[in-house]
Image: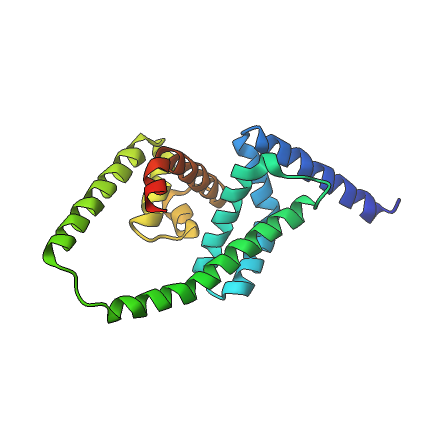
Length: 196
C-alpha cells in the first residue's frame, strides 16, 4: 500500500473514532472535527451562498447537526468528510431557498392591510413572554457559553470577532456556541414546538 493510501486509511479510521467519541457526548471530539474540516465546509457553504456571514452560520449549523446526529452516522454509507460536506451543502441550500421564501413573505406582508390594535397588543405580550423565557434559559447556561451566545445574538458579532474580544481560541468559541445552542434547544423545545 502506498504512503498516501496508508495516510488516507489512517485519516478515515481517526475520523470514525472521533465521530464515535462525539456520539458518546465527548465535547472535545467536535473541536477535532472542526479543526480538520471547517475550512472545507466553510468553502462549500460560501460557494452556495456567497455571503461570508451566512456561510459561517451554516458552518455552525453543520457542526450542531453533526453533534446531534453523530449516533446516526453510518461509515458504510460515506466517509466522515462526505457526511459533513453533505450536511453543510444541505444547510446552505436550505438557507439559499429560504431567501426567496422570505422575499415572497415580505412582499405578501407589505400587501396585507394593517392589523387591529388588539391583535398587535396580544402579539407584543406573546413576544415579551418568549423573550423572558429565552433570557431565563440563557442565565442557566455556563457563563462561557452564555457570553458567546449573547455576543453573537445581541451584539451581532461573528465568531472570529468574539474570539478576538474574549481572547479565547476560535475553536473554543465555536465549541461553546455549539454546546450553548444545544442546551438552549433542549430547554426551549416546548416553545419551539409551539412555533412550528
